[in-house]
Image: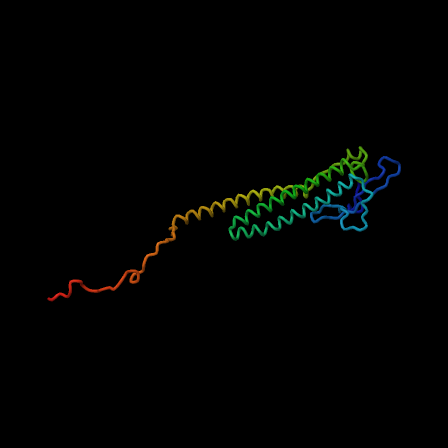
Length: 226
């Protein structure tokens, strides 16, 4: 491999070890963190893309790459929704909202882990299965031995994000259980000071209306003379 034009293009030799060698160049761009990256063509929304000439292994690699992007997009959506349910749950102190946030973070973790698994599948196909250019498996053995591959910050950040999503699920689930237990203790404490009132079927007569008359006021022995 070689670099040219101010480290803005990546090139490799076609026909390694032969008399005439050609160099295929790939356009690179500078990322916000000062690393050179290459845009990967997933043949999505591209009317000029022709995948009919792809082999079966190349189509498997393409589908895994597309699915990887889709899983990461769904994972980001779950994280976005979990942010709002988490804020609402903390504001209202609602165990249900906190439990929903935990489930959303678990789904985000599973989808991102699935995306990383597909990424490793794509890497395996590019390095071991695909025997056509420009994949590594098509290179000369001497070139493969002289090539060194290193994982950079984005790979580590992806796995760290997956792990923290799982950790967030455990913390939110524990918080939901604690809030539920606290609410149950408060309800039990209030029940101690609550006097039950049972409905009574017997009807008591009201004074002055339930007893037969007539009523005589005063003494039954007559008036006293002093």
